[in-house]
Image (cartoon, rainbow, N blue to C red; front, top):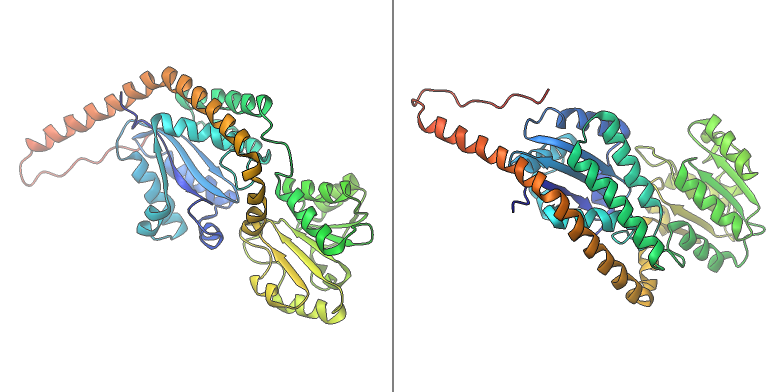
Length: 376
């Protein structure tokens, strides 16, 4: 039975370094523009785009065998990224394997932090966005909806989410090793999104009391500060007041760094004996990587935190194996239900391609090659 009709392509933290993921990161406007472009591809019948700090993935249902390659080419062109280099780091799965991958991603089994829960909401948001754009259909709807059910089953029937399996918890543990106690540490949160909020709450749960929120949208900073019982600060003051804080949690969606080497040097000149701890959860990164070379400055980015979390993986090997056994069973069942639809669609595409080939064989040498019409 053909598996080519359903695919996932993209790249993740498994193959792409943080520096490469920065180059491939899509802004919200970039996602919208790419979605509009993909909607014109005649051979791509359904699609959804998943973009997080650690992955950019395209899930698609195709009636033409070249659809996945077209998606890859469009993405690389938009990001001005070399296509050959992308192929070297590209995840490319078809059929049942693509179904299993979606379930593993949703369940947190493919994350840097195995078992983390944020990814489930991110996948649901990606699916909801695709629905809102009208780019999903009966096949993707079933795969995603049943995939979510399978991921929930994994979470509720195993202990995969137990332990320090989030970036926030790992960051708090690191801070405790540096400062011993968080009661008297000043914490600055740059960015007022979900990730920053969860990290701030993790610090508060471990005794942190002095928390300040700064966001490029001051109203949002005020709202989050009220929720957390913290204070708010204009984003423009972040570098000038950097010396006031011991821990800086960075989680903005800014396209460039928001904390410079010069500002950090100036801050440390005012507090040379007190360590300064940066937790950079942003992609692209918020903090100039060069600050890590300064004395008494500690900088941890997403990959650094993931390496620390990796130490917990061995202790949970049995639980991970249990999860993968469940995922395999669920993927088999789901693919059994959707494979006939996928094969039928792929068969229609193959017939169209064969018919086009026969027509070209009958053309005169000067005849032009027909171009497929964009999908309405």
